[in-house]
Length: 282
Ligand SMILES: NC(=O)c1ccc[n+]([C@@H]2O[C@H](COP(=O)([O-])OP(=O)(O)OC[C@H]3O[C@@H](n4cnc5c(N)ncnc54)[C@H](OP(=O)(O)O)[C@@H]3O)[C@@H](O)[C@H]2O)c1
Image (cartoon, rainbow, N blue to C red; front, side):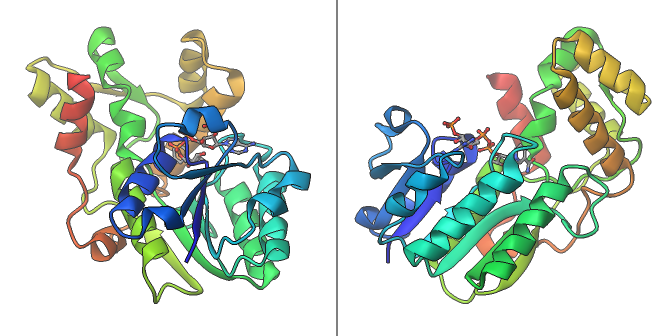
């Protein structure tokens, strides 16, 4: 059975393809990518696939039976882009679509959830067999700021005491590979989060423990955090999205204790301490 992976040159997509290679025949994997040159090292078939070019999508999906639609990173453009892929999948005869959504998409306080929920509804309306992977936060979203926090002397955010049940990107990638390579996931929606949950205060304690420096967590208001992120050079839209996500986290939007990833992948999710140590070693 041919399996297509969109966004295969992205960070998650590359991991999914690598893990799929261990589970299915390499000849059955097709990387669907916006820039084929970026995929020349992947060792699988590559086809051009740009969510913003609907006219080319059906041809690129010929023969694909299972499709992983990795959500686009073009926030604000995602719903029309994803709808174009869903429509093309239907026309091309794809049997089963797997989509990377967001944790608790139908009740999430995060603004990011809107495009994901719209995509989920479009998938269900299409009549295609589906599996929705409601991915929680990548631990790397926070550990990527650890070095900056050490330089500044504090970790900042506005997530308050919200518990964050994140997992490493590779954990979500493995869950996707298990679903793509296996059976029994038809028309299911999985809430996917890490085994371990922590507050940003607890993250700062772990950074302090690993570095031997005292790095406190300074909780800001959403407005203060937006302003600081903008002063670092982040575009206003990205700064607002990050602060809105922290506000959502403060309301429990990134917490889930069902441990579905570890159930799917048959091992615990990667501990925060390990993802942090890797980030600090880079
Ligand atoms: N759960 C979380 O914490 C979290 C965090 C960040 C993002 N996300 C979501 O999860 C997705 C995957 O995460 P990631 O870490 O792999 O992100 P990433 O490294 O930014 O990869 C995004 C992928 O989407 C592709 N893409 C963007 N626009 C496209 C278009 N018009 N047509 C075709 N492909 C397009 C990119 O292609 P190129 O390689 O050509 O650029 C890239 O391969 C993100 O896109 C975002 O929706 C989730």
